Image (cartoon, rainbow, N blue to C red; front, side, top):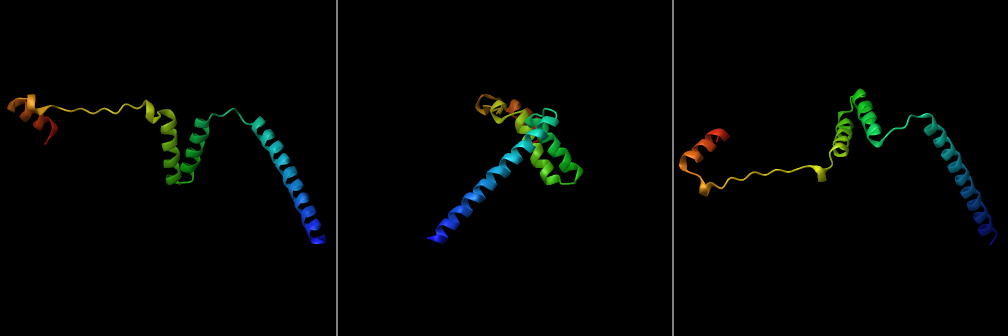
Length: 104
């Protein structure tokens, strides 16, 4: 039973220490953020991409560039365009012209 009380006390002290460290980290974070200019998510991604390029880390730079592209033009806004040609309605001359234009 004595071990249980000691363990419980140690656990409470550890939790208190963790809470205090979290509060200190939160205050430090607020101080840092107060000193930084207001950055958007896009600005942060561009900065990360730039830093990766400066470090010749092209894999990360490409990953950040992909994120920037998605941010600038989300998939839902893209227009996928598909063109179909009904060949049954075309004459032989039209078909030959299309084949020549397409380089087939």
